[in-house]
View (cartoon, rainbow, N blue to C red):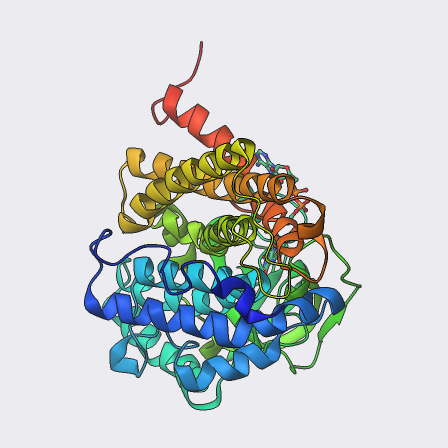
Length: 423
Ligand SMILES: Cc1cc2nc3c(=O)[nH]c(=O)nc-3n(C[C@H](O)[C@H](O)[C@H](O)COP(=O)(O)OP(=O)(O)OC[C@H]3O[C@@H](n4cnc5c(N)ncnc54)[C@H](O)[C@@H]3O)c2cc1C
């Protein structure tokens, strides 16, 4: 796609204006950097990776010198030290320009966010903490010094990714490390990441599988026994190249642990906003669909004849409806990402589900309306709108917080106190 396409309407405006949303100067700068990077680097490459369903590894190589691979690595370890909210806002800016890159970047950044600031909020013994800090430095050094890219495969096609059962992928403790066996589906960055941050169940011989024993291990992509199989030809988010990973007797040393024993299980219940991190990409897509529509109706899309269509009342009403939906989405989402911390109240968790559901559903609803409003010429593959439409369709399907699961939980948690049952 021509990057100028997204440049025409309010090209420099961030999704969340720093003054209006009371962001610090440091946040505003980092978010502006992400936006500039998105426009300059991601936008021109997005159409090709979408068409060919190839992974945009070139974008990740270019992120390295910009410090974007280390955005959430703590400052004392050489990273930028962005917190949860800042990361989400930066990721939304990337999502405006290439959904697949923003979504894959999320998988990489989560390996540092979860092992970094999020783990710092959780309980562990002094000994475990010291070991964890030493271990994560190894991962962080790889990212900062060599630009290593981490994936985050946890989906398996069963109940585990939704949090309902122990992961079927298992790590058997052996002398000095673990032997990993299992399978992950929909592994974004498959075949391109340097490490796979695998969620699996630690299980000694004869032991029962338990979610409490979930381990988060970084498996080198070139380790013996790791393979990528199956094809990848989906409706949207084609550049994520989310193929199937197989692990057959893969040995990894103890140092590959991204979290100490028991800490992932603790995080999932005490830091639930960790699962909200798929949403920024879709916040960006919602904004992109709206921006395109305004530019198109004003006759300002480069490469298109400068035909204005904004004078029709039906177009004005459609844009107003899109804008209302966008503002509602932004307001709720901003609130949810701003109150993410350890031990949230039930109210805050319900709001996080509501925000996830709203962003995932509204991003696609806005894109649907954009296509209807702009008309036939706007859905040609030479323009970004039809890609935004297809990419935005994927958000509500993503576990562990699919749009349906969010609805399920909001209804149940609003009507039942914890532990309460009907007679
Ligand atoms: C573009 C893309 C990239 C992805 N990248 C990754 C990645 O990098 N890493 C990764 O781990 N995963 C990734 N995923 C996978 C994603 O998170 C889901 O695991 C995947 O879409 C699973 O779909 P499924 O049809 O197998 O879900 P199923 O488990 O078959 O569920 C089907 C539907 O049933 C509903 N459902 C399921 N369980 C429950 C429940 N307990 N209660 C109520 N309703 C339920 C949900 O609404 C769900 O959408 C990606 C998905 C997409 C689309």
